Image (spheres, rainbow, N blue to C red):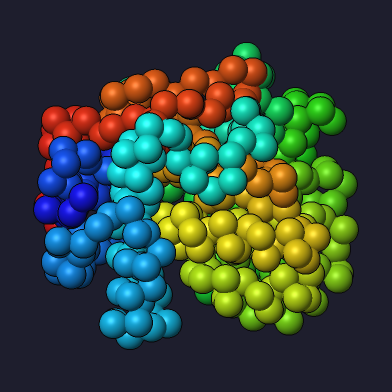
Length: 384
């Protein structure tokens, strides 16, 4: 079997400036594999890099996954994260091809099922209702009562955890503007009001995850984490690149921390894991590829740490991460956006099955679904 074509395809997700990028890899035996790339709002540049680097894969045997990836890593500038993103997107499609060629799900290629269902948390709770209600086809919600009413949907779907961002009632932008790493009393009090109201509405049984991304530096993380201690967060998600700074933050609060979305490669995770900086590491599978994501998760297990994949992209991304979560005992929970554009599920030709807040891992060959190209084409990136 030989690779005959590699084609990246971009798609406007309609929400939050989020671009979706799919990679189609074709072979001379008629087996097509699908992967997905991730570069926030720069998917066109990543698509072009995939198109250029992909020429090196033409004529190669797609079943020799690690060999092709390692060769590409060595032939390029090893260690450059941008090259890793390119290889990861293509590598994911190669796993899909090999699974289809063998007639087995991808999880059989990386250890076999450890679990048949993956627990999920409802991500970006209320956030899209503020930022992109029109794209979702729903009414915009800008007040606390309206946000708390949305908990009904989470509970009705059987979810036991939700993740949200700092939303402030009446603020038209939804999210407050950055303070370049600092935090003030206004934001701390707003977070206490929002999370406190959520805890009162949800009760103790619902996990509340609070995502601040790369918004704050160590001192601000400490202030916010300590202020939210009374509400027993499932975790506070905070990104940073200094393991000692995050360790110092962890040592000053009993709030559980999650970190890792912005890191690429097991070596980048190592200093954080060695210091036991966080209770959970977040792995961006689309940037690391399946093989490296598995190595990171195994490394986390070595340091007695759970992992949870970053997963707010397309339904294909959800399937990819489900296969990773299905084989590893230290997977804690998987992110998913349930409150999203109405056509999102149409991007793949098989439905994702969710029951009582858990994803049922598909047993079909490869990832278990193919991308529907006509739906991708119907949502081109917006100009400018």
